[in-house]
Image (cartoon, rainbow, N blue to C red; front, side, top):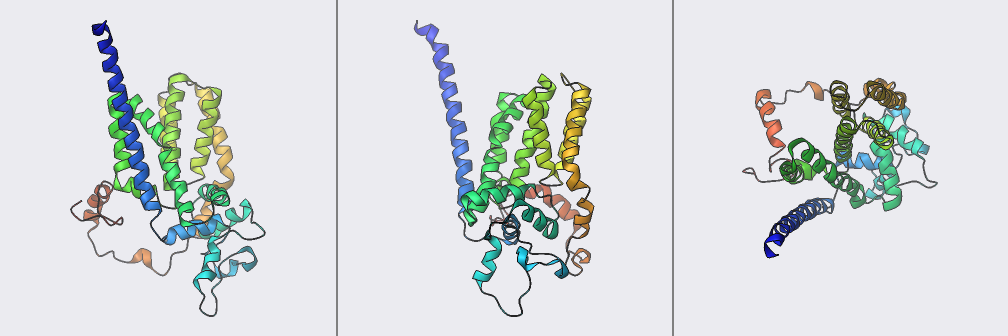
Length: 314
């Protein structure tokens, strides 16, 4: 009897150890992000996020400013901090989502998806710094099951833990998953659409899989333009390696996605053309070797040094 129970106990002990490891990884990842969230102060881009999510445009041609719609207008004299704080708060009567889209079109070059989500988030949790950044933390931690599933499917069970640990322990992963910008949300939508593409390949079109793939695609394309290359790779891969997915089903999913994002993308060149660059910044000599920067940039993604204040040896 004891010999027959031996393998069972061994498997149980391994399972318990793995569960404990995954739990510890999850807790440590949350701890790192919470520590960053409660850091006092926000920087310029985060302030822009909060302003647009509450329907305020901060950067626009002077002729386009409308004070009644909450746009920033330069005052003839100095203003107090409280005067500026109103640009990061919801107005009364409450502005609608259309005001958020207008502010994004005036002040930003990105699509409005993240700012609309942040609009709803701040209505529920407030407009404080912790509320602003916590949305990114939630999006980052929601990547967990998709990353684990993708790593397991591609590299086997032994690949899951290293892949997930690298994502959550990397300095750049910790930094941007606690910043009040759209990058953590893009990570979530990217791993979700890749995971769904794998399911479409393996299982074909199920009702909910196809709907979720379209929703993830539309959400990603309306959150950041950098999602477009990722989405195109998924579409091309599915076209080449369809598995159980038919070409008719793939065509329908792509067509529905494109129809949904077309209203914004047909106007995107106009929004991008209005991008405001002060002076001749684009023409300044950076004063450093471009070849050196080309090498340093990918290394910085795994470095403990950089804008997050780590020591140089890290």
